[in-house]
Image (tube, rainbow, N blue to C red; front, top):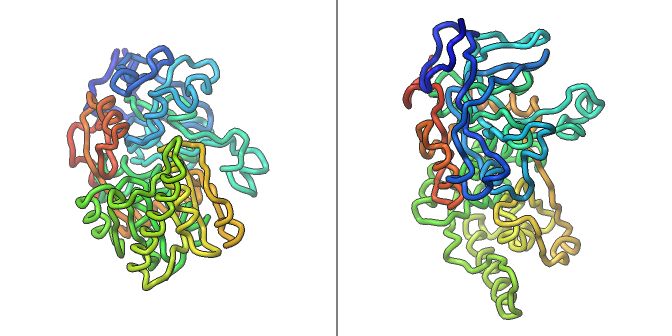
Length: 404
C-alpha cells in the first residue's frame, strides 16, 4: 500500500515508489502579490507523465526572477496559460533523481541523477527538427509558462530536458545554475559569436545571469567589465574573471519615468562618463557586446555604450519592459539589438559539459530550507541577494550529492 506522503528531506528506499500525494509551494490567482503572500504550501496530486515525459524526485530547486513575476501576477497571470489547471507550481531549475519514465523514453532510467533545463517544445514540428526548438509554436518555459515546476517533491518534465548531474557538485549546487547559465551561454556564444579579445559590458554582473556571463567571457578570452551595485559585488566580479568592475551607484545614468529635459540631459552626460570609465579597462576601446537583462533603466545607456557595429543582446527586463532610446545611435552607428531566450537542448548539453569539466563553476549565494521558498522569492524581489539561491527539497541538508 502506497504511503500517503513522503517526508521532506528524505529519499524513499525504493526508486519509483509513489506516495498518494506530495507537498508543493503553490501560487493561485486570487492571492497574487508579494511572494510572502502568494506562495502557500499545499498538498497536491502527483502529476501523471506521458510517453515522452519523466517524473523526477526533486532534491533541490533553484530560484529565478520568473516566479517573482508569477507571484505578482505580472506581466501575465501564469495560471491562465496552463489550460485548465487552476494553480501554478513554479520552479524552473532543479536537480534530482529520475523516478519514473514514459514508455517512449530511451536515454534515461529510474535512479539517474539529473539536472533539468527549462525549455519545452513539441519535438515534432519543422522548427524543432531543423531550425531551433526555440522557434516552436508550442515552446514554453517549464515552471513558469507551465505548472508542475520544481517547488514540489516531484516534478514532471520532457525527457529532452534532462542533463547529467555533474558528479562533483552537491544537490544545491547542481540546482542553481541551469536557467541563468544556459541563457547566458546562448546569448554570448551562439547569438553574439563571442570570441577572444571581445570587450563585454555585463549589467548585474554579480547576480546569477551576469556572474555566468563573466565566467564565459573569461573562458573564451574576452574582457568582461561588470556593472554592479556595491563594492562587495565588485570584488566578486573580479574573482569570477572580470577585467574590471564598476559600481553603478557612482553614475546617474538610469532612465526614469516622467523625466524633465534637464534630467534627460544629465542622464546622457552620466552615460558618457560611464563610457569613459569602461574604456579605461579596455585600452581606450568601447564595448563589442553589451549583455542586457535589466531593461527600462539601462537600455538607453546600452545603446549608446556599444561601439559602432557593436551588439546589444537582451534576454529580459527586470526594471521594466517598455524601452525607449535615441535610435540615431542605432542606425547611424550600425549597431545590432539581439533578442535571446534561454537555449535549446544541444546548447544546453554543450554548456553543461563545461560544468562537468569544471571550466565553469556555479555561483551559489544562499541555500534556503524547504520552508523558506516564499522568503527566498521575497529576497529576490527586493534585490537583497547575490549569486544564485536554492531551496532544499528532498536533500536532507547542504553538502550532499557529491559522487565524484
